[in-house]
Length: 347
Image: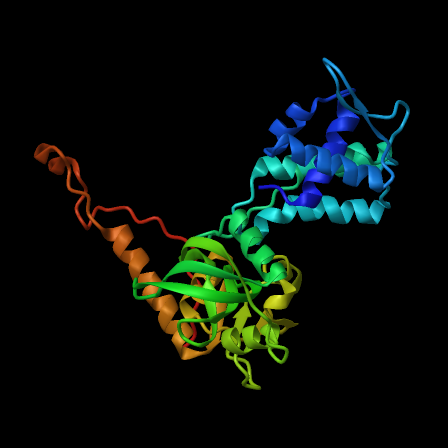
């Protein structure tokens, strides 16, 4: 579904691409009624865009001959920021279409000076960004839907699945969306529980924006609430991990807003606060860096639990379809073991 502003820009782009387009064709492309096209054209004309209507068979709309909108102009630093942002969109851990990213890159590169375009083309051709694994990625359409509901102050109806796999129907008043340690959350007032809550986006089902509006509580700070729920209010760090790597290497792996990084004699000390130790353990394993956990003890237990699961998966025996094949299976004493670097967990 298009936003009205998006429809205006789409009409303008189409009329710059094609000499003439009929109202019916514009309506088909924008998925609206023909009378809506007439309204959008009038809005563009009121903004000073010289769109002319051609009457009769084969008529339609066209831009006044010779009229061209001035191209977007970016400095080298601005263009680099945009291109790197598009290339790094995979790190947002959302289900963003690769076609949308490629289309946006093509449009940006098209309006750049030749030298800048060549340099950024080299970046896009040779830069490889691999996001870390995540159990569930929210669809980008869900992020847009919730963000629009927040902007319009409209209530949202949804089915929410709890950690215990229990589903309840909720009507919520959305305040903000946040990504934190590989997960996405909605800060909202829950009408069912009559209180503010955090909702994980990957546990939402059947999300529908309602026509009911709400008034935001003037004294509620969603950012402070999010920090209190996910980080806590304690003065001392909840997590202390020492990586056996260089500061530059760790900085390339961990975003700055995740916590502080300090160089030590043995490597790099990472200090942060995070409530979900299991997701933290999975994240640390995915970094593929040796480390020692100083605190908390619960994080060590979570890492040991993950290690036990990996050992069980690695040592599980496959039952052959043909019993005779068992004669060719290696015994436990003959089984080859593929070893990899195991993070060091301190006592």
